[in-house]
Image 1 (cartoon, rainbow, N blue to C red):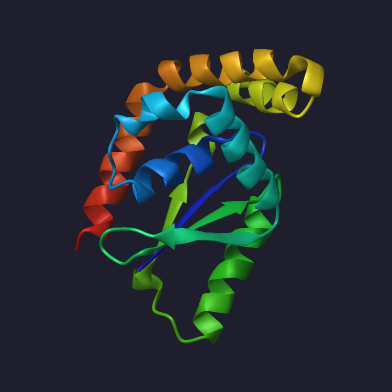
Image 2: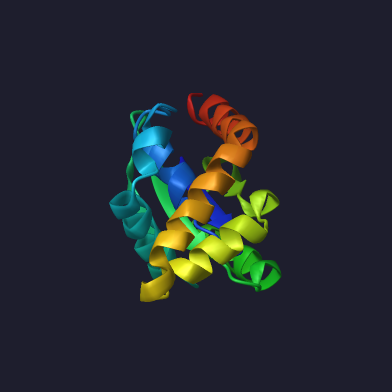
Length: 152
């Protein structure tokens, strides 16, 4: 199965969710992700995924995990991506699109913006930490749904 985490690109939640997914859905890793180095690393991965499908690894069930950063062109990029899978004869049941855009808010947006500015990096990290704590329930909900669909 192909698991593709996608979002608007202005936040790093897609890379956070994919990191937890690749670590056997261990939610305890969420605390270790909240370090400055880990968040900066995830921010870098998220920026590399702008308009690209980035392979992140295989999970414990041999599902391939990807990250896609669609910016504001989600209505164009997602159908184009699905048509590429269709051209290669991959059944749509083998593709799981995990939309992370529902968690987009001002804290993730400003945190990601500030992380890109060296003088404001620390403020960005703190805003991302706050946003993660604020949306912990949504994070768990998305991960539980994804875990249930990938274990089949």
